[in-house]
Image (cartoon, rainbow, N blue to C red; front, side, top):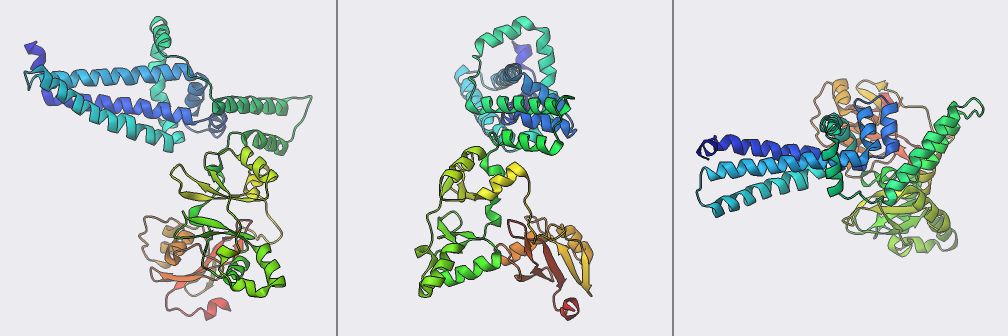
Amino acid sequence: MSGVVSAPAFSLIACAVVLIIGAGVFICAQVALSELSHARAEDLVEDGRRNADSVAYLLRHPRRSLLTTRAVQLGCQILAVACLTIAFASWWPLWWTVLLAVVAVAGVLMLFVDAMVAPQIGRTRPETCALWLSPLVLIPLRIAILGRPLNRALAALVPPPAVTDAEARHEMVADFREMVDDLGESDQLEIEEEDREMLRSVFEMGITLVREVIVPRTDMVTLDKDTTGRRALELLSQSGFSRIPVTGEDTDDVRGVVYLKDLVHRLINRPDVLDRPVHELMREAHFVPETMRVDDLLRQMRSGETHLAIVFDEWGGTVGLVTIEDLIEELVGEVTDEHDKPEVTIEQLGPDCWSLPARMSIDDLGELFDIEIAEDDVDTVGGLLQKALGSVPLEGDEAETWGLILRAGPQEGRRRQVSAIVASRAGESEGDARE
């Protein structure tokens, strides 16, 4: 025993920490794989993403992948406890002090790394984690194939996971996608690529979550509940939207939705009503969870009277909004109209005055004006203007930041987003630009 106890205690503790982190890596991989669908894995393979084949293989063998990751996780944790026990036994002779120390240290590390951090990373970045960690999972998986008897023993200990509705949906969509691809490649029945894409979209609506198609809260145009109906009518006209959410204290406190047609009707029949606050003129808001599926919401919107829903997260906070048009676009692709203009390009309007795409990066903006813009929480010119204004920019809105004057250009597209921004140096005359 003395030879074992004489091993450097700090090296054993460091080894235990590494083993616990290793267990967390496999837990992260397991969670990430469980978040991905077969259809999404096939898309990654078609896109040529690195290690996408490994991800697809693991998803085709979910039980084997689960057993492997759990076996490695359990093995790492057992070895970590053994290392800590040997290390602490070399310091304290009493067994109960060693037991308390091992339980405290191992418990805290495993709770923080394996139960909190690792699953959260896998859940929030499933694609990245799966692509990075799938080759690592394949190593013990291939070794486990050599030990079939041990694998069968582990299979007997771990009950097969019940097939959930979500998994059944994913399996069904994967089968339909494969059928559509087979029909497209068939010589007897020719299906155009556009038709195949629409069929895939129809099938995938059953597994697409609402949070994937929303207008995020940062892009929401809202009205305060005390705003007058007349001011609301002006904002609706300026923004190009036909309905806008009404909020109380903040964006998480959505009270209802005001409709353009309601205000126009009142303007024609009783103009004096528009001097009232919008909370007296609004309709009740419709709320849906972000985990709701797109096909369920589309069915709900078709059968109901509302075509706009406020999307909330598990904590009850507002994450965005979704309209029936968003859901239809998910099915048929982006919808444009006769007012949409071609893609915005960089155009010089005058000395130190440029018309820029709203999606242009702030690094390119700084290079254009030979200044350094140090912003950590925004990446685009549109985001920079929105931060300076403190609200979603509408056409004509203007703000000064980093020695520049940014003015919002026209709003385009169904979501009425600013597509171009005019940028000029502060103090410069804009007369030349307007000419």
